[in-house]
Amino acid sequence: MGERMKSYEHAGEKPYLQNFKSRNTGRLANAFQSVRGKTAPCLLAIVGDSNVAGHGCGIDGTGFVDARRYSAPVRLSLLLRARGVNAHADGIFGNSGTGGEYEYYDPRVKLGIGWKAAGAGLSGGYYLADSGDDVLQFKPELCFSDLNIAYCQAPTRGTFDLEIDGTLVDRINTKGPNALVQREWKVSAGYHCISIRHSGQRGQVGILRISPHDSWSPDFEVANLGVCGAKIDYWSMDKEPWSPFRSVSNIKPDGIIIDIGTNDIAHKSPLADFRRNYQRVISEWGKASDVILVVPVARALRGAPEEAQRAYADVIRELSAENDVPLIDLPMCFGPQEVAFQRGLHFDQTHLNQRGSALKAMAYDEALALIE
Image (cartoon, rainbow, N blue to C red; front, side, top):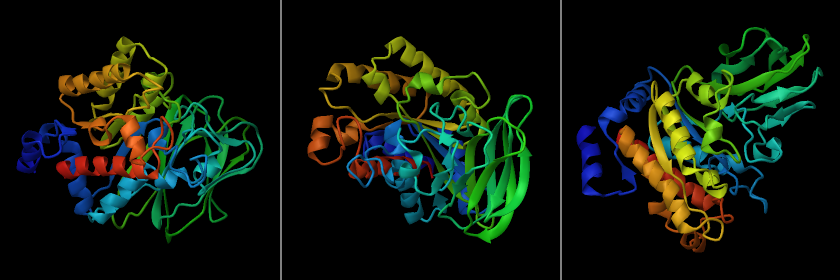
């Protein structure tokens, strides 16, 4: 493994993959071995904005309908499967997806009356705004035997029923001290419909994560944590255990790809604040996970001058070197946005289309191939 990494690091075969070393990718390397050896699963979280969520990849003119299916994280899971890794991206996370109606973005999910994807992204997840008993329904495209649900516990929270294929499995009271709680349930192996129904005690129900697994063959889960409009300060919010900053650590990923910065460029975040918040998430998330930084694909120059974009990109490159963590430098793959647009890789001046998302996923996959 070390010699393979060394050849890429020094020979310049893939100059957009930098600083991949055994000392900063050991957790992911071990997780790959565990999945290959069928001894333990792996969780890779891809943290980002709408370009991670998949905005621009949809099958209609809005770039939104069924966009999750063509997002870079889902594409990455397919590339991993092509390499013989038992990978999937079938879990759902309580984020705002691509900023529109969630059911269009991800048709596997049906949100009943009162349920909605929280506008604050991971900070609260799906929740029921009233005391009705309508259902959040999720039909994974995965044969599974284990189900992991992470939910928000707080003094004012309510109760929900967990149903599998219409049969009550458990009733969970989420009232208690502030915490992000994760629980596992066993089900008969197969394809199932998961339903969460608000019941009993009044109060909102916050669902952060629903993740199916197959226990007979430990899997490599790719988690799409793309939140529309997110800047790096969003991911550094630390008010509650389910706030973005803590929630990423609390779901315990083996590796975290941080692909953020486009909205900081668009909204002209102060560079000093951008660096400070970015360093904060690296320091926290890197305590228990391997961290890989990504320089985001450039926006159209009419949306942000080239020198301004370069300043943010340089901060990410510097943080990679200063923290000795790997870097995927996407502008080296895509080139200036105007060039990428001519190559048919963009939906608009900010978002990638299906082809662009596929190219991004290939860069992710090439990076992981160095680690494995």
